[in-house]
Image (cartoon, rainbow, N blue to C red; front, side):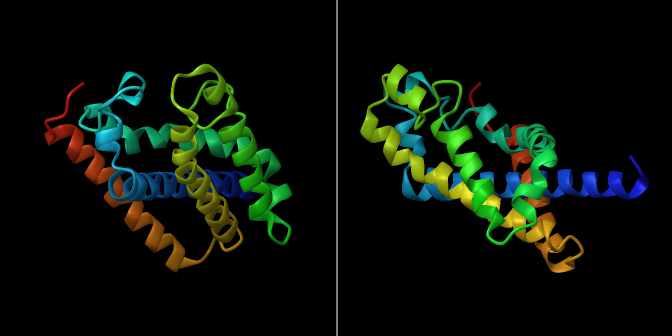
Length: 183
């Protein structure tokens, strides 16, 4: 791999990681705090048997774990980037991939997946109610990857997303260090 190829690869990994972390946090905040009140839903059965409470130190640390998930996602997507980056509306191909493989057809019983609907005790109506968060987060992520990857030298995008990324990681680190969460 030549220097330019390495630079393009690392740029892709950086952009996917930043955008995944930002959209993960923003959609988690909007849906979890403002629309769905995860604090309540995660404190009563059946979700309390499946999810950690929102006061858990692990929930505070959640954005920090995206530093692992983002690069994994980028590594998986990189060989297929030309399928969704080099065509008009390519972001829709990427979103279809996320929605089909990672949400509906997740290999484990994730809520909202076919496996989750069949093998968990979470009511179907509740699983469907929570689907918009993951569907919209992956839609936004797909569009933003497409946008930024096709404009890799756009300083406005870099500054905007880098500031959000740093603030999110700082809040998460502060929550872990100084939060009074449970384990």
